[in-house]
Image (cartoon, rainbow, N blue to C red; front, side, top):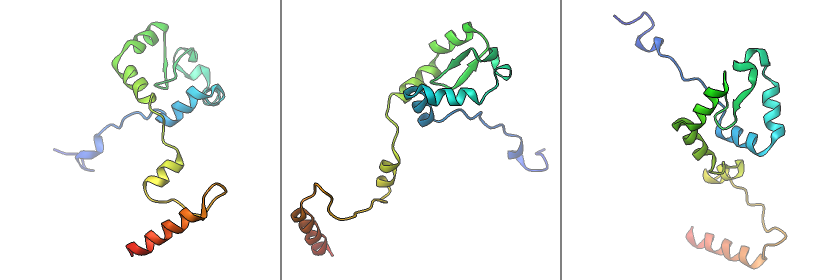
Length: 124
């Protein structure tokens, strides 16, 4: 018999880890990683925060667990994902068509802009 609130009420959710762009920033800048680590109290962390996997953003209780994790498939999968450069905000906006055209810039030729305008008029 299902529970009072429905069959979906007892499902567990996945534990959320840091996103790939956050981890990528941690790898690029030691300062960014240090800011994150400073937000955690060492006595609340497993192993007093001594063993931390930057790529997976996980804390481990012992060095043995940490080294086993480094040899495992989930860690290797995460490292492979991090090899790809994350998208910037500009690329994301361009992908959905939110670009701005503020006219010719310093290096743009006025002639090429006129040709583009003429082509757009022909299409309409």
